[in-house]
Amino acid sequence: MFSSKLCEGIFKVLVKDVPTTCQVSCLEVLRILSRDKKILVPVTTKENMQILLRLAKLTESDDSLEKVSEFPVIVESLKCLCNIVFNSQMAQQLSLELNLAAKLCNLLRKCKDRKFINDIKCFDLRLLFLLSLLHTDIRSQLRYELQGLPLLTQILESAFSIKWTDEYESAIDHNGPPLSPQETDCAIEALKALFNVTVDSWKVHKESDSHQFRVMAAVLRHCLLIVGPTEDKTEELHSNAVNLLSNVPVSCLDVLICPLTHEETAQEATTLDELPSDKTAEKETVLKNNTMVYNGMNMEAIQVLLNFMEKRIDKGSSYREGLTPVLSLLTECSRAHRNIRKFLKDQVLPPLRDVTNRPEVGSTVRNKLVRLMTHVDLGVKQIAAEFLFVLCKERVDSLLKYTGYGNAAGLLAARGLLAGGRGDNWYSEDEDTDTEEYKNAKPNINLITGHLEEPMPNPIDEMTEEQKEYEAMKLVNMLDKLSRRADVKDLHQDGG
Image (cartoon, rainbow, N blue to C red):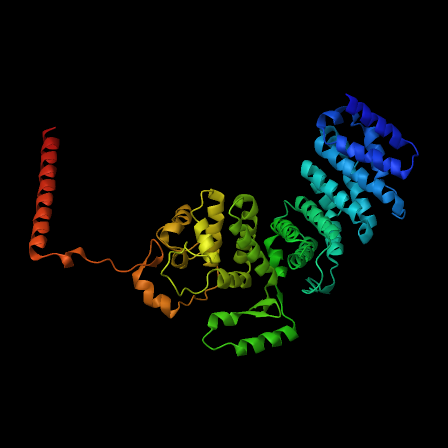
């Protein structure tokens, strides 16, 4: 009761023309109190929401953000609105009535190129994310009416300070400084809001949509190639980028890879010539000046996704939330884009040389993925098996070579391919080449376990003639008993 009275008193003070320091103190207290849902019930009114909107500069006016002294009030007001909207259903309904999403987009446009107001931008984006999370109708409004997709993409461009070198290519400075904590937080909030806006965007219907998604994918490629202030922040940034890439139509993901420039192509050719002639596998993938190159294409972003996937596997927990998004993304990229599939095949399933160990034993990416094929979580093991199956061009014989029949049985049974064959999707007809080591070992490989087994000794070879005769007579007697039982059974059936 006292807390509700205190909230009402705070709103009465905020209406008055009081000093900025007093406003900030009142808003800080209100922010703490607004974490309690019970307190919010009597004070969540349209009038009180309008007071906070006014203090947060969430109005329809075109007034610019010039008074730096007002920034702390704006930030604290946005923080209060985040708590109130999250904890109060009444506030969520009032947000629709007051057209809060449009006001938030208007504020973002005022500050999208102003780096010194990152706190305002960050909490504006957080509130936009909460609204689009709690109200599905707002997602459609943001996408089409408010042009949220290009707006939020521009926010990301600003946070990353992107300089475009081509329509869908940005300049990457590998030796540049990491993102600041403020820039990283803004980028993460923008990625989360964009995820909600694009959550149903599997199909592109217009050319303008295709262009906008390609621009966003190019920005996300840039995001994958930069780092945050700490390792944890970098992982959080990349995790949100992966989630958003999962919403991008797969036809637009071709911008994740890009052709090399003339200078880079010349450098790659020099590197290839320096490799020994017998290193055929290594000739296709070259690391030059910290750039992963495959078949004349820059594969840095795909390599980052692969490293991210392996790191999530190594964590050993929360596979469904942390691992399946990146595995699904890599699977769809591989299915739709030949160069990406061939690069990932080269990295994950290189030509087999040593087959003395089972496919699930070891520390390579292949070993880790094969272990996931028998995971207790059905969703995890399905997507891990699907990824490897796509890398093998959905050919059963190729998959079994790398995983063994036992590990692949679940996938093959689900697809009706236990007897062999291939999946429904079409892939190029380039053939896999087996190493000499694999060809020599192939006759002795156990198809179930997928590894080389030493021939089992024949127990008869160590028996004397008397032992062989004894075992033979024992077998004859057993066959005779079985025959007699069958005859007796037939007599009973005839008699019945």
